[in-house]
Length: 504
Image (tube, rainbow, N blue to C red; front, side, top):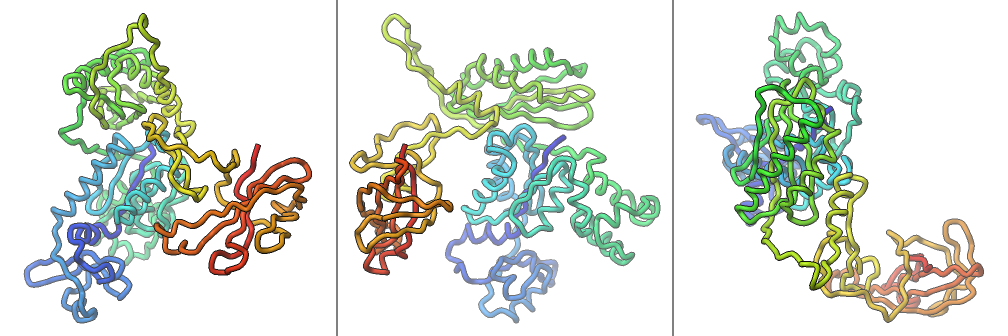
């Protein structure tokens, strides 16, 4: 069962124009105007224009009359499509080997067999939307069993992401409006005239009268949405991608046969990588079946490699996920993400011992999808929660270390938790505190250690301070708690107490 992601960019045209021309004021309403002869109408509006009542289809002259200082730009469909293709190629390198444009304002991709590299479907969607949003592109993303369902849901919902569980597509789409079916405007108007409002109402109606009046398109779109007929995605490719193929005169299906040809493709791919001095970080195996459907498997590595044995093993470990169906007629292996890789001299073993390389273990664990692999690294910050970051497990050491002057807990809570404390102000340690419903009497305490806010980075922390105490309760357990503020001046903090970590 494919898992299809539809990404919808509701303001792609205006966002592209703003990125290309930063001089356009952020608060100014921006609209895109299409022309046909002497007729002008709005083909796209940004959020500022929508707030003042402008909408797609409104006459350009009327919009100018309604909004003083309206910023109007002529439509450029070719530039919009080029921008969409650039986004699609980026998604190809990051998320899935089967990615295609869904003009005029969307991307579609099959992430079956690839979402494990992103930590699962929910994390993949939220990460995808956040990465677009960080670049000034608001987006909505839905994953479902079919392209039609994901397309309709992405353009009908207000939430940024949504995951439709496998086999639950029919329940999710019955209340969608008719516009979610990708039908022509004339067909939708005709259906509404007959009283149809939702996809569910249309799906429950006999096909013959509808086909007789509107043609076969309605039935085809319904079958695609509900998964009764396949809707293959024609993946985008760029000339720079190194890709090798093997077509078969007779379809293959046995796991041993598939494994044999995967090994040959890996050998051929590594030879091409070696000729260009490259190593692969992300490899995609595309399986073309005789029923005109495509399945894809993606394998990632922590470092660039072109080791035939190792790449073959990573792909062979996932052969069981391949569904040959009625047979496989073609296999393609693509190096979607590559990096320079120079030859290096191997240690002879007689002179010195080779360094222990754990990247093979990282690759195996990462491709199983059990969890995302990362390493914690120090950050130069006195604020405890900002003094640590997640980095790649094979990231180079930057020489920074955590300060060893002051004791720090072995476990730092994700977020400081509010506690109730009895203590004398301004500098006395707590006598007792209540955390998670349990009151603890303090037997020993050390502090305060005052930590100032990063006023040079955040104006909100010009005067902020925290006073940390290391306390030990009557059972011997030690905690790291702090008071927000110096205990005297209310401008330095709320004077509420929090627990931030626990010691061993």
